[in-house]
Image 1 (tube, helix red, strand yellow):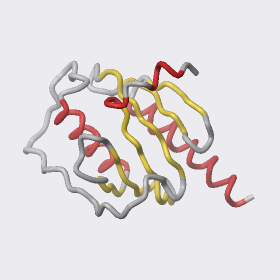
Image 2 (cartoon, helix red, strand yellow):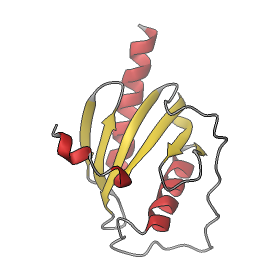
Image 3 (cartoon, helix red, strand yellow):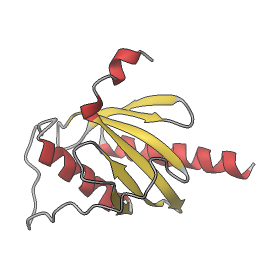
Image 4 (cartoon, helix red, strand yellow):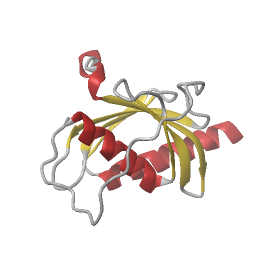
Length: 141
């Protein structure tokens, strides 16, 4: 893992997973462009908040415009007293491209000192799920 790859902090979003129960997660997104941590409950809200952040930054530019029936809602910040570490796991998410109506990038598990690339949102979610399950196993052993 080369250090050069992680120098552009503008692309990085800290994903703090606070709970993960039967695939339902809660946590916070932390990014320098946000006024404070943005909370999420469930995978759908996580994806929508991330997509909203990427759209607001206009980076990376989407390959295709996302289809919707209604307008999006504004970002909602969480209190600044939140720490920058998840209770279950903490990830550094880097979305490099938004092509084919999906995301491509890399996910770094901070506690486990591991990194993996993903080619789609589904692959990202599967990485998150397997890593959180592994982290939970390590805490119960």
